[in-house]
Image 1 (cartoon, rainbow, N blue to C red):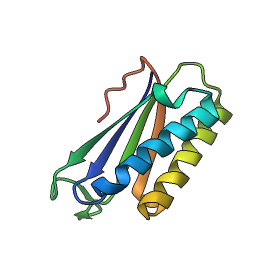
Image 2 (cartoon, rainbow, N blue to C red):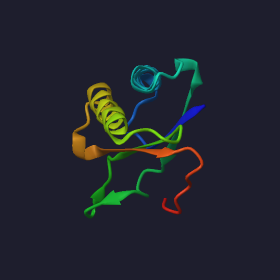
Image 3 (cartoon, helix red, strand yellow):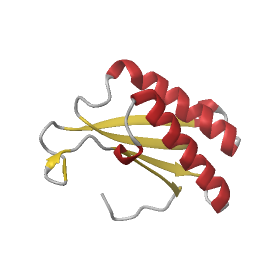
Image 4 (cartoon, rainbow, N blue to C red):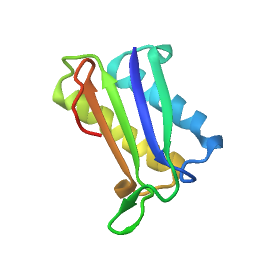
Length: 113
């Protein structure tokens, strides 16, 4: 199972476009990693309005945290991350400075949140 945890600012990623983001993540993961789209799980967590700031202003940044199978080659990982970033920007209309995408090996749990 490949998982994505999408941490978004309340009100920035409308509920009606989230299914497109989920299918985009599944399609890209299938294309780049060869996983079946059904093997991709996506969850959304919202940061309450007023609880996230960047540079002294309310944040509009989304964080897309992936857990992928261990051993992914760096060029493949980079391709995955770039495609996810491009898709996220296209679907949401956000700029590249409003999305952070990472893909850690499954089982690797950094102590950073």
